[in-house]
Image 1: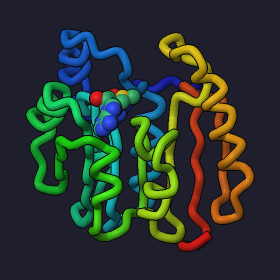
Image 2: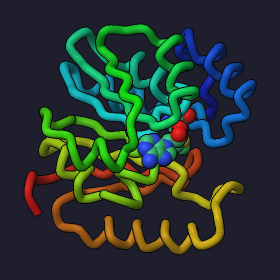
Image 3: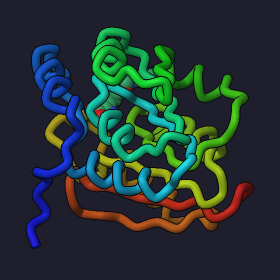
Image 4: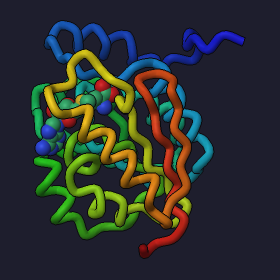
Length: 195
Ligand SMILES: C[S@@+](CC[C@H](N)C(=O)[O-])C[C@H]1O[C@@H](n2cnc3c(N)ncnc32)[C@H](O)[C@@H]1O
């Protein structure tokens, strides 16, 4: 077996990738992350999905391609320029694009819970984790990437990552698996609604 991703890549992916490069966006998710997200999304028909940190929509395109007709995605980013690429390339009534600060969005959100959360921005991951995790249904998936050292990590980030992983591992309201694959992925399943 080879774990390369060269099949069933979303139709919009290549154009989004070109636009991503043209914008000089340096934090795009990779193909493996996208493929795994699509697979997990496909396991949850009729689900509500949340992505924090849309970027230009690379992972969004994978998530969309795994969604059935009854699933919905809310995706949030505070960068209107990046979000516009995603909005333009992925016009779909099942997606709600939200241009907002993730800190404000997370603290103000009062809607229904979600079945899968791709936390790909500081808010919802290293900051406001409790608020984000509280938005998941029991059995919901908390998904993060970039957990292995990346060239763009600022000084002090490695320590932050290590203590975040330790916090996750010590919790008794989730079960997780760490994957030293792609950029380093953690899949955590919420096992009950309240800690
Ligand atoms: C790692 S990138 C997301 C990559 C994207 N998921 C992909 O598939 O390529 C992080 C994103 O978080 C966004 N972001 C940073 N701070 C934010 C904030 N306070 N609120 C909302 N989004 C934020 C950035 O604009 C950036 O697009």
